[in-house]
Image (cartoon, rainbow, N blue to C red):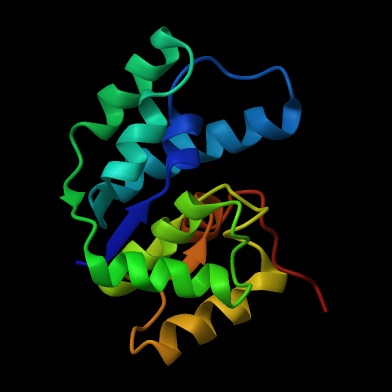
Length: 164
């Protein structure tokens, strides 16, 4: 069974009320539909970083996020992971100001996780950075995860076949 590292933004989209922002509400609904289906198709994994991020902020929202995250297997953060995270930042694949994002990628790569699911378009699911992320991971001897959104993993019911 393929593995998926669940980055914190995915859990954030699962918990709580639908947002008033139409784009975010759509992502929330897509995430919830994907989650319900994907749990039987993939093995979901997280790290302590995800738990720490889920615990931050509003206590009610944090408790909703932690209720989801607490049931998922936890991957330990090793020295090798920290070294790869540092290398990702040193080589400009992820900004040094975002060490947790670097750790999410490094954890996924070191453990050989197949997919990293995220809604973080700024530093993780960023097409302009993806090549650098993959290069740094491979140079360190690790196959990078496929970085994608839940929508990309599930496809979309609104996707239409082109009529060429």
